[in-house]
Image (tube, rainbow, N blue to C red; front, side):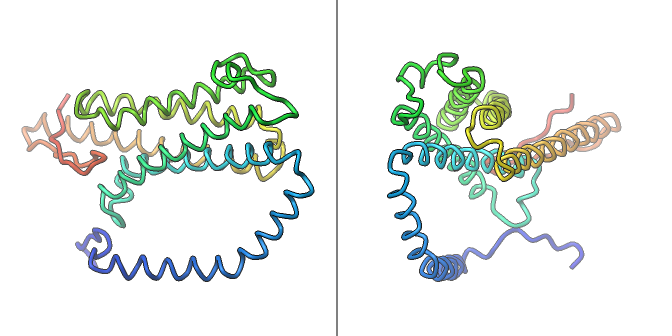
Length: 253
């Protein structure tokens, strides 16, 4: 209906929605997990020596997917595209949690490199960029991306001390981390030549680039609207794009 804006699901139906989701997951898991477990057991038995490498690659891709999800969620928050279907505090929490999960998975991925006997990494080579025995520049890009994400995640917990403006500015580091992680995966991953892996990395890059371009264009349009309103003496535009849902008056520059 015209003039009606959908502001998310009714919170009173939350228990029903989660219950239906749990039932759906249970049905799928019950139908697939037994065969999947037997298949994984057979692979593990046949590739016992390769298990560290297999898990290292698994955690690498899971970390990248979580990081990409966090970046995409952040862009959707800043462009207000999620407001029609979800409450901002919930979306903000998911954005923060995905970043933390990605960081944890990336840390496990790095530690597993020390257990891979095909090309073992020492602790210094795992932690210090540029010392890796394999593709040192590409590995360094991933290490730097990990440290940048750690800084961004830490900023969530000190936002009240550094202020909203500094926190938002610091968040731009996320894009550098994403670029570093993508370059790391494409250039250093032993399976990065596979079509599915390239599709994963390039598809993620396309989605993030599109949303970032949209975000920049929307920000430019908003600033022009604010300037135009200030020139004609109109009311100040109220911004509601804060990640946590707070409304703040926009400053006319």
